[in-house]
Image (cartoon, rainbow, N blue to C red):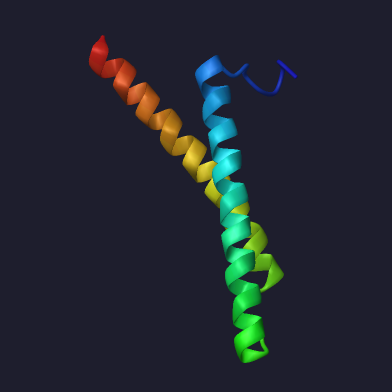
Length: 78
């Protein structure tokens, strides 16, 4: 794996785990909203495609934001 990807630092791994948890909560909240909307209006608010990509993108974006903040904080201290 070292040929194609760099090794993640401990902090980057922690940030990715936080991003995964955040993405999971986005999945849960969007599914709850979608199902509640279905019970009230008898049609779905979001498609499965939108729910899938919302959770996936939110996990990557949140971990990237945490990594950027970590790098900026490290540069300020130096």
